[in-house]
Image (cartoon, rainbow, N blue to C red; front, side):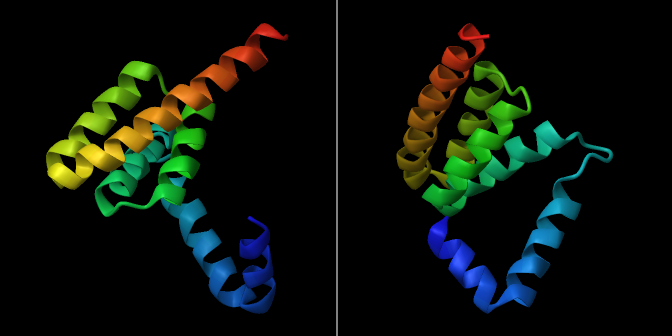
Length: 110
């Protein structure tokens, strides 16, 4: 994120424009925000973007995505991506376990 911040300071129009597009595309409309984050997660798996998997997994969980919803999302992504999808689907699975455990710890401390 530190490098991203540096880049944003040097090319603010590009990064700001991307941020605006992201916000507009992900806001609730006919599809709710959680559904769009699950879509983002599936696409991240298919295009093999580890940073995207991490980011969208965190966001989906923050928005209340359940383990079952995430597993079905991973399944659709694997189906669409074939063999490479199993590799990146596994990375998403690991991220899911990690972030759900963190969420449970935070929830039990309240």
